[in-house]
Image (cartoon, rainbow, N blue to C red; front, side, top):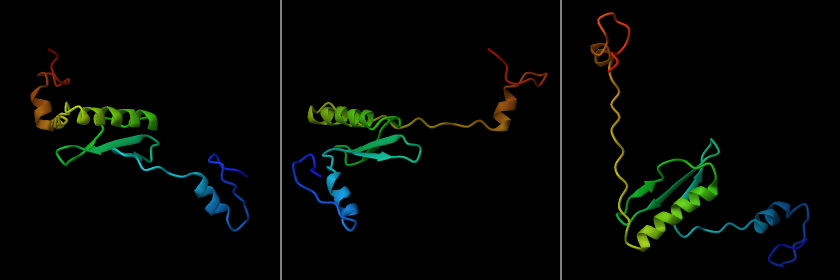
Length: 113
């Protein structure tokens, strides 16, 4: 068997595992990190100029999309147009008391405006 790099590879029962891992050489990405989640989606993150790790705003269906998002963030940094992402908005969960305060006197849910 010949690998795509032209190197001749001999497969024997002892070296099958080693040879297969050699054929699929992994390259280390130069910017950011892409992690495959248990859901099958991909999470992209990078270290910004501020020294903080920033996650993508969403998870990506395809690894290529996560890679493209990282490429855009890297270009922003190189062009010095990068700005830190806005902090996530605090989500306030209404209490039962808050919810009932907005109910109509008949008790049929929040009043429509």
